Image (cartoon, rainbow, N blue to C red; front, side, top):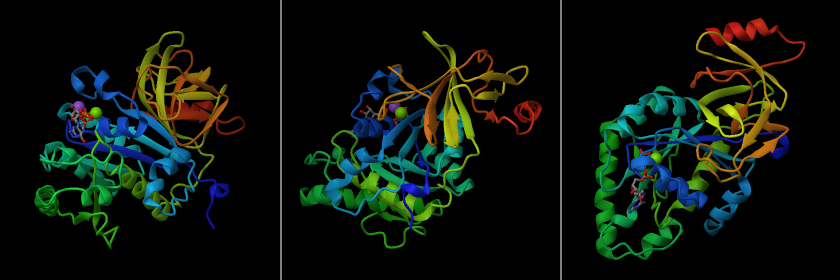
Length: 343
Ligand code: GTP
Ligand code: MG
Ligand code: NA
C-alpha cells in the first residue's frame, strides 16, 4: 500500500509549448492569479515555479467524482517561456520535471516551439499530456466556467462540436507526423502508448479539472518509484536575483531531499565554487508564483519538491542552471563538493 506515510515527494510538472499558447494563463487560471498580465509584452522570460497543495487539487477536481485520492503532498509546476530565444530555459525546465504539459493552441495547431519542446521531451523520455488550449475561441463557444470538458462539450451546438472535431483531428494528424499517437483523453484507452489530449480554456476554465486529475493520477500510477522521497539533496539553481532586504538570492528547485536553515551549501560561481550557509529559506505562499515579487514565508526546513528562494552571503556570482550541493557533517569533505561544483 502506498500512502503519504510512505513518504512520496511532490511530482514536478513542467509546462511547455510555443509562445502565447496560454501556458502562464493556464497557471493563472488554476492559481486564481494574474501573473500573465504583469509580464513585459505578455512574454514569459524566466522559469517560474508554483506549488499546489493536494487539498487545492482535490478541491479543483471534485466535480469529476473520480477517486482522486492524492498520495503525494502536492504538485510543483514549472512555467517555461515559449519564445524561440529561450531554448536553454525550456531545456532546463524539461530537465527537472517528472511529467510535462505540452500546450497547443487549438486555433494554430503544432508550431515550431511545440515541436522543439516535443523533441526535448522525447530526448529525455518524459511523459506528457497535451493541453489543447483556447477552446473558448471556437466560434459560438458557450462558457461553462471551470467545468469538466465532457460536460462543457455537451452544452455546445453541433457547429461548435463539428469545428472542435475537425481541429482535433487535424492536430492528431500533425502529432502523427511527429511520430506520436495522440487521442482525446476521455477516449484514450492506451495511456502510455497513446498520449492524452485535454481540451482546455485558460480564460473560462473548461477542462482544468480534467487536466489536474489526469496529471496527478498518471504520476501516481506510473512514477511511484521515482517519487520516493530521498535524503540525497537534488537541487538546481533557476535564477540569481537581488531582492530588497535579502541581498543577492538564488531561486532554486529542490527536486529531492530536504534543505535546512543553516545548511552549508556549495554553488557554482563565475570564478570558483561558492561555499556559504543558508541564511533564510523562503517560499511564496502556496499557489503563488516564485518568480513574482511578493511576500515570502520563512521556513526552518523544506522538503522536496519545492521552488525556494535562498538567501545567503556571497551569492553575487552564482550561475543559474547549475546544481546546488549540501555539505553533510561527517560526510565527504567540502573539497569534494567544490570539485563537483567546478566541474
Ligand atoms: P509565453 O510564456 O510568452 O510563451 O506565452 P504563454 O504560452 O504563457 O501564453 P500566455 O499565457 O502569455 O497567453 C498568451 C495570450 O493568449 C494572452 O493574451 C492570453 O490572454 C491568451 N490566452 C491564453 N489562454 C487562452 C485561452 O484559453 N483562451 C483565450 N481566448 N485566450 C487565451
Ligand atoms: Mg508564459
Ligand atoms: Na505570452
